[in-house]
Length: 111
Image (cartoon, rainbow, N blue to C red; front, top):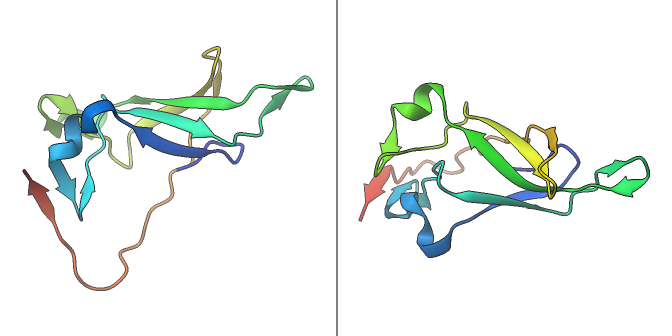
């Protein structure tokens, strides 16, 4: 994922996050409780840097029907917005679909 200005979006969850116990294709499931931070954003407004620093998700629609410990999971259709440090909306993040390489799929697992 990335912000609309070229920054990189990564999940940061203290203690592994709510969805850490559930995995899809070996990766932890991202939920609305997870924090997402942005690094390397090049956004400039009126000549002053105003980089994206975080992403907030709005898990409506299908995300409300799929939950981990009562917390909605983030789907590829979940709406989101990037924000500056002053919580100014900066635009939606860019979510790129990852194609499955190889033929094996691990499926859904839980510990």
